[in-house]
Every structure is written in C-alpha cells, then in structure tokens.
Length: 219
Image (cartoon, rainbow, N blue to C red; front, side, top):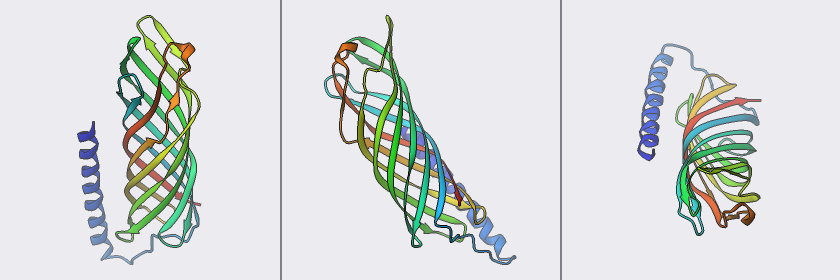
C-alpha cells in the first residue's frame, strides 16, 4: 500500500505538471487571466484512501485500511497563510489478532481538526498547498467480529493527535479548484477499552497515510 500511494502521488504530480505546461503554452496566445481570489473564506473538501496502524499497549499491533473525508472552512490570512477547521470522518477496516483469536475490525471515528495552512503559487493556475495542526477525535462505531460472534463499542472516548497534508491544487477559475492531497495522522494518547467487553488493553491509531482528491470553492 505504501508503494502504491507513492506511485499514485508521483503519477498525479506528473499529470499536473503536464497539464500546467499545456495551459501555460496555450495562454501565450490568449489574454492572461488572474486565477487568484481576494476571498477570505473558502470551503474545502477532501476524500482519501490509505492505511493505518493500530498500536496496542499489550496486544499485537495490526494494520487497517482507511477511508477519510474532511469538510473544512478555511480563512485566509494574507496571501499565503490561513487557518481551517471543520469535521472529518474516518472509516477503518481490516483483520487482526489478539488473545481472543482472529477478528475483523470495523471502526468509524469523528475528527475535529484545527489546521494552519500555507500555499505557494507555482503558476497563475497551480498552487502548492500544505497544512499542519492538531485534532480531537472520538469513536462513533467500533465492532470486532470473531468466529463466535461480535463485540461492539470496545473502545470509547476522545483522544488527540497531529495531522499534516501536502498537495497540488489546480484553479479552474476564481471560484473553484481541484487537486490532489497526501495526508498523515497520528494519535498522541491511548484510549482504554471496556474490560467488561472481554478485551483489556489501551490503543491508539498511528501511521495513517492517505492520498486523495481535494476540492475547494471560494465563498
């Protein structure tokens, strides 16, 4: 999965470079337009796929697939900087092993990030964008499926972590842009399980790496 994500990222960056080169060549025969915007607020949407690591305190660690979706309100500060916040949803699925045997794990989380962003214009249509910040996250659904049955809501509560992202955005006009984004996540603290559920351990989600599409619209 790591090699696949890296290959996709390289291929998409190359595609953006080719697209930008073609448009720059085309613009030589037309009046240049300013694709920037003076809008202070913008809406950002991100959806990605990737992998994550479940870091257990006592039980073996295991890997999960992850699908993420972020919906953010961004406020621009100056020309290059900004702050963003909103909500994010993560869906994790995969197999693992603990004292109870082999299982299939499904988990849904709600995440609230607070990000500092920076962007740099590579041309009048293409921007390099990056962000970094912290998040608070809570589990909204947690299910372990064993051969003998399922156990729900093993882990509950809030934890906190660090989130980063880097990507390229292509401005179609002054309102709408579309891009690619590579993001990472990692929890700071562990959350405890409910010992009455038969799993006594503490865990956190680390090594989250996703790649996907970024959509932005200036308000």
